Amino acid sequence: MPVSPDFSISMRALLAGARRKESALLDLTRQLVRAESPSDDKAAVDACGALVAAHAKALGGRVKLHRQREYGNVLEARFGPRSKTAAARRILLLGHIDTVWPLGTLKTMPCQVSDGRLRGPGTLDMKAGVAMALTVIEMLTEAGLLSREIVLLLNSDEEVGSPVSRPITERVAAGCSAVYVLEPAQGLAYKTARKGTGNWRIDVQGVAAHAGVDFEKGASALGELAHVIETVSGWTDLKRGLTVSVGLAGGGSKTNVIPAEAWAEVDVRIARKADGPRIERKFAGLKPGDKRCSLHVTGGINRPPMERTRATVQLYRAARALAAELGLTLDEAATGGASDGNFTAALGIPTLDGMGAVGEGAHAAHESIVLEHLAPRTALLAGLLAQIPSEA
Image (cartoon, rainbow, N blue to C red; front, side, top):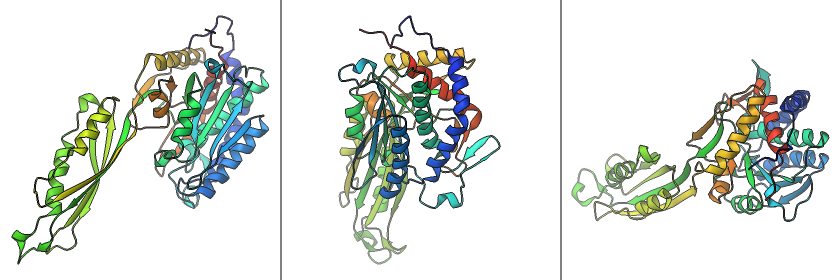
């Protein structure tokens, strides 16, 4: 995304503005964290979304709810000048408000500041990123720098695979020139590549028999599953960035019974889009070694990979140049985890990820964000949104 020569925003001024907003940004993050929002609780997710919607409206946002039955509503808020045709100038800020933490987690993981960190469930993944986005909109509006339409899209089901929000994300992203994903940083780096993900379940049906009296009449589902696990695990190809991991397995009923049933759940990660159809064909082609057993295989690729493209690298380099003006070194990184940015990247839309808070412990009891990085990261996001792309 080339920048026009008349672009002259001061990154130091944006940093000063972000520091002035830091206390309010921290307060907003606390509010969002305390509005617990597990993916499987629609009412809780919607209550958190209502806080964001109210804040967005107060900033002049044009708010739309994509209402859902089973999951929380997907929140879309548009800021800046309305744009019907100038998609080349429109930017999507992408995130989610659901978390992996069940209601009541705050009792054992209170939201509090200690040792230069804000701790609590969902602080890093990704309530702080949402608060950063809203703060940036406020900063640019007050400074008269919101010269393009910015779309903030917050999904409600990202942590469970985005089953309802994916088509909304893809539709909104299709009208934008770039996507900035507010997921946590990789260390201090922005993410220019993510692996795609897939999940499969393999059910094995065998033949039950008494392990002592009728051993030969039985066909062990667990024995067959062991062979299947060895087979699929052998599909891992580290040089290609392809991993196949059996994370859960079980079967059988009693120790003196040849097991008639067994199952396994498999996690697959791919770095290349072309490996998706290839691995799907491999799972579809699984056959039992013992003809008395049968296999039932379900699943598939859930998210395509976010591959490192020239257009995404161009976004990263623009961010790196702005970071340098702040005296910061901004690296790029690839990760095995996936986000909703995988969907937008697969559409061919330049997507830069990991633009949220810096911290550690996502999905873990020590989840937290590092406060010293909050203002610089917010200023950097503001600088990217304030840039004026050259017109075609």
